[in-house]
Amino acid sequence: MRFDKSARTIKMECWPRNVDVSDPNAKQHEGWPKTILQIDNYGREAVAWLPEITVVGATNPVVKISDEATGEVVYTLRMNGSTFRPKVFVDSLYTVELSAEGKSTLVAKGVPSNRNADSGMMPIDFGKKTTQVTSGTIQVDIQFNGKIVVNGKEMTIPYFEDLLSQSNAPKVNIRVNPNATMEHLTRIMKVLENHTTTVSVLTQPKQ
Image (cartoon, rainbow, N blue to C red):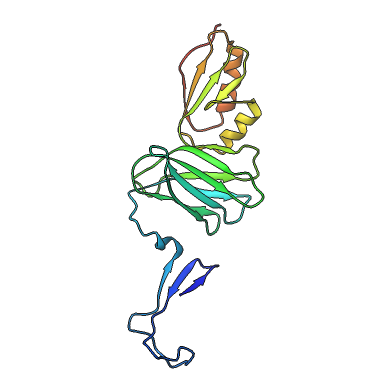
C-alpha cells in the first residue's frame, strides 16, 4: 500500500506469491494496482450536502462535521486545498468546525443540509477576528441598554459586522427589548442593509 500525501491518494498493490517485486518486468494480479482518493476511503453514499467551504488565510485546514440532532461527529478530515463540499447522510442541521495550525478554531452552527449538491457557498476567513461563523438563522436580541446579543453571545456592533461578513445565513430574527429605543434598532438595520438576507423584526422598540 502506497500513500501519496500531496495527491491524497491510496494505491493498493497485490502481487503473486514469490514474485520479485523489484523486477521491472514483474506483474501484479490482474486488475491491480487499485488507486482511490482519500475521501473514497469513507465511501458512504451522500444523502445531502452542506454548502461548499471556501477558505482564506489557512492551508489545508482540518474540518469536523457534527450532527446537531444527535451531537455525534459524522467525520473529520484534512482538506486538500482551499475548497471542500461536505457530504452528509441524513437531513439535519450541522456544526462545522475548521482548525489550522496557529489559528483560532472557526465554528459554523446551524448549517442546513441540502439534497442539491450545488448547495451554495460557505466562505471562511481565518484572518477575521470572530471565531463564530453562522450559516443558519441568526437571532439578534437588542437589550434595553442598546447592547446586542447574537445567538446567545453578547457582542459589539463591529464584532457583529465581522460575523455577518463570514455568514451565509438566509434569515435574521431581531427581538427588541420594549425599553430599547428606535435608535438601537436603526444601528442594527444599518449593518444589515449590505447583506443579502431576510430580516424579521419580531418585537418593536418604543418610539
